[in-house]
Image (cartoon, rainbow, N blue to C red; front, side):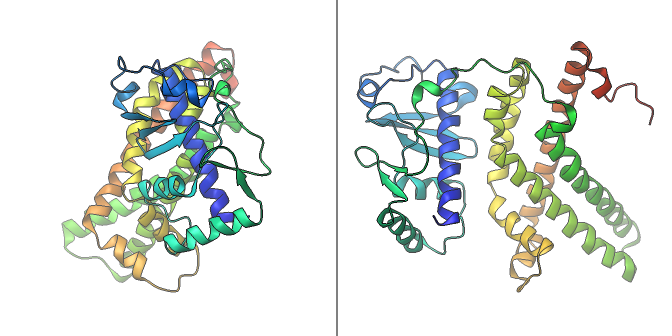
Length: 320
């Protein structure tokens, strides 16, 4: 199947699981079937945890997640893997993503082609499913106990993202700000300093984009809620706020990143981003929010290592 469509469907299904996990944590009784959902009374739940809005409708629900809304229907027997073309398109647009499709017509043509080739098959009602993927049901949400085993430091995806990518962005921004301060003080930069300025700016934004992409791909809300010790849930409000911030100009930043790390054919996307004071201010804002999130995550890790006799993984007390 078309890789662009596959990527969109996978992201949509992740968002549905995130929404359902949040709904369950907020006290919403998840249904066994689509018919059960119709008669579920939610009059006592005005909004979900952390102030996330939701709207119950027919056989499904719309949840306004921080990174963008997701709308879904339950399958006849409680399936949660279903989707349709319109929901996928709205999901992508809510997240300001194109997934490589030039326009709506190209997306619908691709979806129809996948239906004709039986890569996408009917589920129930208007819903479809991936032919080669096993079905997931609503009862799978939250059935496993929260994992109390934190991954080894070297296997922790969040720490890897921080160390290998965000640290690089941090170093580039530090060097960039030194030149910004020098230019402000002396009203000019030398030729070599101007070259370095461009390198630091491009590298900072490039690594920041990679960090944002990694942050989103980890489905951080689910990771904190389902795959980390319970105390890591304290980071969820910060995680949700960060998801909202990243979504504002993520697509433009990603296009800028592509021009940094790949041979570019046009400078339009590059100049369009760095010439916008609003986008540069936004980039600095999410850089600061990522720095805070990673710092708080590391603090929790350090305490966990020490309290669970894993001091060899801790950084506290290590010689510099």
